[in-house]
Length: 355
Image (cartoon, rainbow, N blue to C red):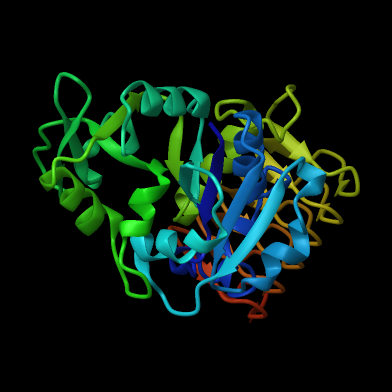
């Protein structure tokens, strides 16, 4: 029985601005490669060879980078969504490009570690119409929860609550039988979580869950993006796209690292980036061509393409957009975001009273 994959990558990534002004979220560098590469490698490792990408925002960027998919051993097909159609509408929008009976659907901004073959086995063992991957989390209050019965059949979808009755949350991966996708209304916004799945359950269709405690992270915020990248570098998050040897930092061979610089916490330094002498990078994500000058401290922060961080600057838990210029001794803390091309003069922003 053939299986194809659908990856929904049409979102604008507003929570990650200003980084997503120039590139879609799934194409942002993550542990040395575009984030989507990790998911495509997992799909290939599960024995799925044909992938349909549901694109919208900056749709051309995906095909420019991945082409026909042959370098990854995949056949990639691109379908553009002209108007926002939601998760269900996005899945329905690619229906004409599908050729298999079983379709595995992925949210394109989730970093996961579950064994996709096991999810497919659960689907087939239950002769399911739809199978949802659910992951157990320590604190489910920030998520909608999904209840299942003793047989693993999905019984109810619950909105976020301060007292969740289950620790099982929707992990954003589904397996559909093709005919279920064809039943979704075409050309109109539809939510699988709020409309399609509840309707299938009320109609008595076979909606089951594959539940595990595998690595899972929604990469939608700067905090989660930095953590996910760090986890990939350090080997906490699995990815077939990376070499087995992991460590405290991943530095591109074409990057320059000055004497006495310290790179820890799963830091990533991209192509052509320069790290000055004595700089300290802890859990930093440094995009291609960025420059961090001597003595600067970058912690849990994303530095965009071609940005410059001046000597002895301190940036903690922030985002610096492409081409921005942060002057010497500046301090940017607690979620600060600098838009592309913005220049802050030496000492222009401080949290300390001294210079």
